Length: 174
Image (tube, rainbow, N blue to C red; front, side, top):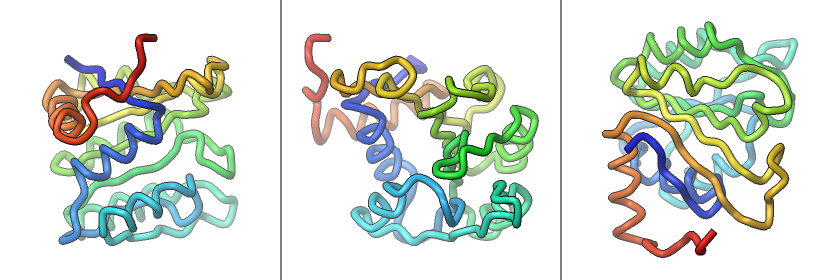
């Protein structure tokens, strides 16, 4: 009940945008990150609050946390960040999640197996954390189109509600 599977992590991310963000509040993301986040925001008419990266191209954690609190919205970022490849430590991720208990925090870990520590262990501690991963990159199964989200049972149920009301038969027999 804490795992959600989809037709690649892109579909999982799309359903995340649909389930947890809305047009009345901006969600927070780094200015330079995975290029599909603005696509999903546009598709679902969700305003974005883009946080500039630091001079060394690292994520500005404090600014992302502060803006999320102001906007009462969620946060999404890739870790390692795309396209910079820079990684937030697990302790930094925990600070972000802990400081935003009323906001969903999405960590897109498409490239985590190439370096860094996954935030998955934190889902047992924080109900507002949702981690996505894919079988396309380090697991070398791009053609399988299989991605997944991991989080609290309540978050996963929200995703399943979206999935079963829009596209219930999206993963093949694999």
